[in-house]
Length: 111
Image 1: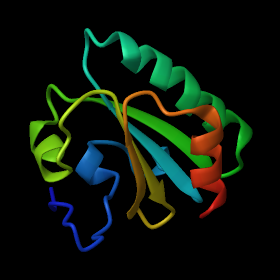
Image 2: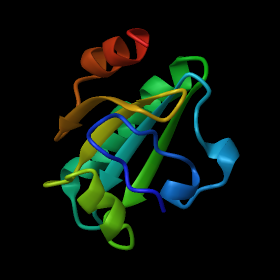
Image 3: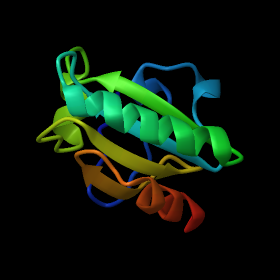
Image 4: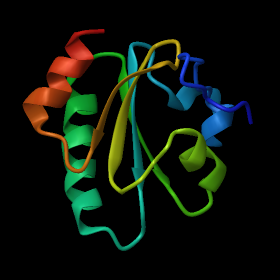
């Protein structure tokens, strides 16, 4: 795994342990969750809603357990954390906690 750096190095599908076709062409909503996190379920609903209604956008949910290196590289301090990746895989926006639907739609639209 290449380690995402603060200088904006992109994340790849391989970094996330996913097939290449799982990332969005326009944006990927990367949600880092944990198994017993109640707010993670709410964040999942919001991110999935945006992905379903925006062209070229995919929602990917990874469990922090099993992705410890990725979580450390991305400085994940709490779950849920939702990262908005552009089409090239660079982190453009980040929110810890449940994102507001309007905020997440605006973040995607800004790409």
